[in-house]
Image (cartoon, rainbow, N blue to C red; front, side, top):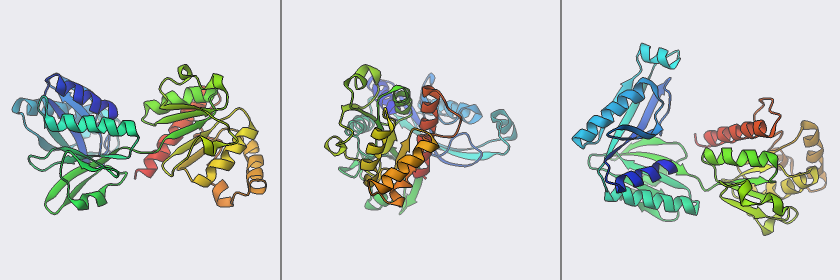
Amino acid sequence: MRTMLKTMSERLSAGEELILVTVTAASGATPRGAGARTLVNREGRICGTIGGGAVEFRAIQMAQQLLQERNSGQHDFSLTRNDVEDLGMICGGDVRVFFRYLPSRDENALAVTAEALRQYSLGRTLWLLDDLDEGGCLGLWTREEGFFGLEGPLWLTEELTRRPHRVQREGRDFFVEQINAAGRVYIFGGGHVAQELEPVLSHVGFRCVVLDDRPEFTRRELFPTAEEIRLVDFNRLSDFVTLGEEDYVCVMTRGHAYDTAVQAQILRQKPAYVGVIGSRAKAAGVRKRLLEEFGLTEAEVNRITTPIGLAIQAETPAEIAISTAAQLIQVRANRNR
């Protein structure tokens, strides 16, 4: 979404008119669910997707027609038998799509995109609000600063969850989506797996911080897309990092002793996810040390996922990175429900 907002700002500032296409509801077997978006100009799709296939093709055509009319609109699509077969599905579905017309140099949209990018840079949890009422506009909400771009009713803040959804209440109609979470992925260890993992995670929208105690493994050229790289002492992590319940942790230092030291310090902070590289045999030994030597509870130790990643028989650093990224995507999706 960050890339789409940046593109939206650039295109509007350059004098283009756009349509922001948003799936506001979906049922049955549809390619994408609520929250899928694509940005369309007079030539066609610019970025994003609502799932491809017949629905997206027809939605783009409709968006281009609305650009001619300079109007917003809404349309319900039903996947026909032929559509379903083209997509390789076994049953049909329905998709409700909202088309937001954005005039060139639209003040509201430009202000909202600029503010959203600022909030991204601050690492704040951020919601995009789309007022679907006639004459409505885009807006934002953060816990720190409240509403931006529109005057939303107080009750709307009660509806802001991790799951994108439509809210209809007291005669108002909004589509709300959390487009940024305050949590980061803290990767402890900057070795070969971390070097493969960080760019994959960054590409799918995670904010990554890489930590190592060796200067040669905290060089920016090793992690060009990481949000931050820190040179730390693994035995004194409280001097360098404080974790929250929105954060994810991947432990992949250069040895069992350092892995154990990291786990002993971070588990009491209760991050959303703690994954540790290594075998089950190694995990059993580390578990025993954490319980007996470091005094962690069974509940704390049970929060560890090890071996890290989905069980796809990954062996190489690149394969382990893919399996780990897939697991983090899964955890994030489950938390957003």
